[in-house]
Length: 102
Image (cartoon, rainbow, N blue to C red; front, side, top):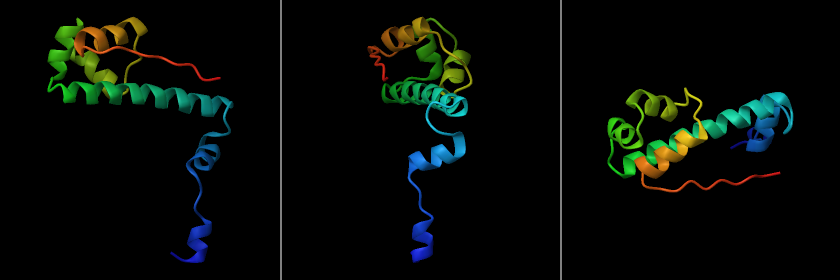
């Protein structure tokens, strides 16, 4: 890699600052919120696949629909906390742990 190309490298945090603004700005807060929703969908999908379950099977166990599970996994749906807990507890046999960062 040439010296000039090395100087163009930026950290992930700097990239986010440039693209979405500094932490605490409305555009950065929106990005962070959407990213967390995306992560939840990925975590549910990975847990479902580890248990060799289809979306339909998970939906039946959790008392919801395959379409709803699909929308969560593909980040196209807001999810209520009670529904998330039911999917994790009854559908996947797990426990939800939350934390707050200030």
